Length: 248
Ligand SMILES: [Zn+2]
Image (cartoon, rainbow, N blue to C red; front, side, top):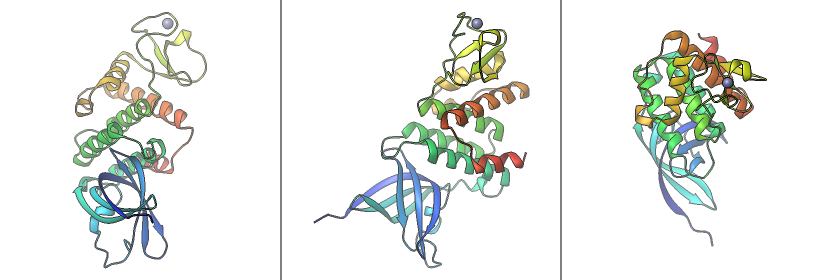
């Protein structure tokens, strides 16, 4: 006979979908098990005891029942509500894109502590307005690409070996840095400052990833490269990203 077990995991709610009459199906990003799905029974009733703990973009300590490999939420104790995301439409739109993208690129039922750590640090900074939306978005896309297995190779031009090409581009398909004249196919331009920032971001620990400065133009180049590369590797777009861009 299958047994019921309690499982305690901390995680960030990335998606909530109405399920049956009063339930909600959650997609949660955890450090230990990556993406997990869990049903929160009765979560849509006014009398639900889950409160804020099962809401989108809340980081909670969950107690789950596990039965026949399926999880249901027994309790959800909020650890971080990211309240600053909920009072600002642009911040909320960007955070929603980050959540949707994480649900698309994070592994299921295998460890994802680096992705979760970045997500929590970025949502915290976004929620507090510590860095601009453009910085948060570029950092997320570039680092999520690398963590999910598509690390661009930015050490030197892949053709001539120049360490700092005068007109650097990233070839989207190969993820290789090249001088513009050596590149073929779809590419994204960088400049010296945005290239240096991209290299920093691929190696920086999560706690330090936001400690860089870039002129506006260089940030725009970094942002275009990061988005183009990330979406190309995921082979899809996101409704939440379109909405975020419609606000700019
Ligand atoms: Zn070259």
